[in-house]
Image 1 (cartoon, one colour):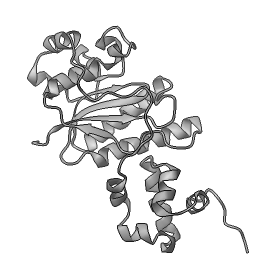
Image 2 (cartoon, rainbow, N blue to C red; image 1 turned 90 degrees about the vertical axis):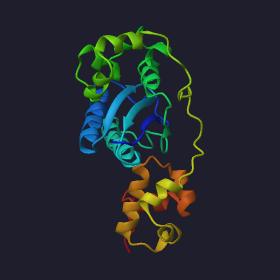
Image 3 (cartoon, rainbow, N blue to C red; image 1 turned 90 degrees about the horizontal axis):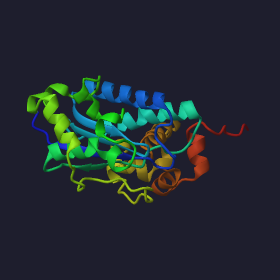
Length: 243
């Protein structure tokens, strides 16, 4: 697999935390593991923080379909469990191709230490550091241990760490991201322009995909030039008046 290794950051949109108990962490890791296996991905590291998630992976093509699948499945599980509405994740995700993936892996595993959640990387239960202690993990252990033995990895993770990789701000700023790439995966420019003339089934499909990608109501209203009432009506949340 010759694709580059990507460092991906997912951030919460409005909820105080992405994970409220141990079950939430386990649910996300199960979804992540299934996506890695089904998508032929190589996951080198991860870290589940209260308001953001780090992933270090290599995938056969663009990571977008896999990331949106993970976000959609976990968001649905979260909403069902806590009976919440609205976007769980910020729209899209941040991605970089690190020049030094090894240093980036160390940076990710040490994020809980930098933020005061753990005394060392191995005391934090929700990161890829556990694989170096023999714990079950969705990361590609064979690839990591081909590069160095567990003792060497443990020494690296306990050493100093650079702070020049993507950081998550304490409170996410309002999103000003370009929504065009997301929209083009969901509907054509013609459908976007003539949304009012689409069939009810197609409207429901498009709006459902937009919501699953964490697009806010405000973004959808502005993009499709429709009202909040029209969105809820098309999604079946409001019953049409009988004649």
